[in-house]
Length: 280
Image (cartoon, rainbow, N blue to C red; front, side, top):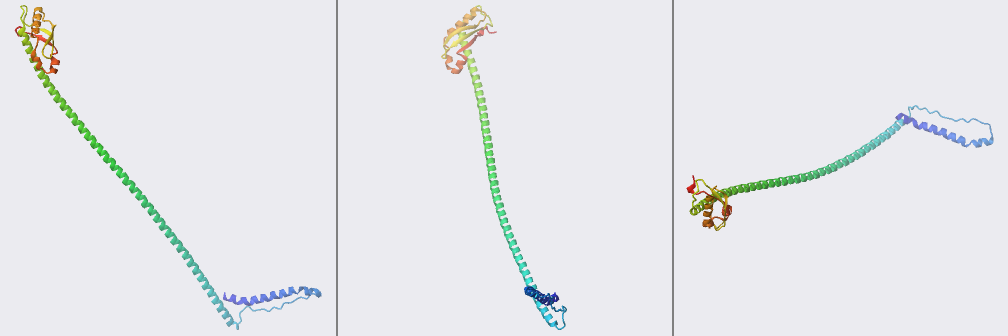
C-alpha cells in the first residue's frame, strides 16, 4: 500500500503533461490551417520515468512512507474514533430504548397492578355483599322457621286447650246429664207417687197393665194438657190413670228444675203409669 502511494505522484505528473500538450495542440489548430502548410507530424517528447525506486531517493521515499503511514494511522484513528462514537451513539440509543422499554414495562405493570387491585376490590365488595345478603336471607329464614315453629306450638297448645276444654265440657255435660237424668228420674218417680196418691184402682185392673200419657206442663209445674199416648188395653184403667194425673193440677217441685232441663224433659214429655200394686 505504501509502495503504490509512492508511485502515484510521478505518474500523475506525466499524465498531466501529456494532457497539457494535447490542449495546446488543439488550441493552435486554426493557426496551422491558415498557412496551409504541409502537414507536419508533431512529436511529443516524453521522458520515461522509471517506476522502480532509485537507491538515492530512498530517504525521500521513507519520508513519504512515514507521512503516508502517519496519515493512514490518523485516518485509522479517525475511523476508529468515528466507529467508537457510532458504537457509543448506538449504545446510547439502545440504552435509551431499553430505558424507555423498561419505563413502559414498569408503567404497564403499574397499570395492570392497579387494574388487578381494582378488580380485587370490586370482587371483594361483591363477595362481601353476597355474603351479607346470604347471611340476611339465612337469618330471615331462621326467623321464619322460628315463627312457624312458634305458631305451630301455639296452634298445638290451642288445639290441646280446646281438646281439654271439650273433654271438660263433655265431662261436665255428662255429669250434668247424669245429674239431670237422676233429677228427671227422681222427678218422674215423685210425679208417679203424686199420681198414685190420686189413683183409684178400678175392679177390672190387672197386674202388668201400663198406660202411657203425653203431658204438657208449664215451668211453674202447672199441668195444662193430658192425652193418652198408649192404652193399657183396659178403658177403666186408662180413665182412672188420666183422672189421677189431672188431680195433681200443679206439680210444684218442677219449679226447682233448671229451665234447660225443664224444656228438655218436662215441657212436653211422656209419662208411663204403672202403679206398684199392679207391678209383677
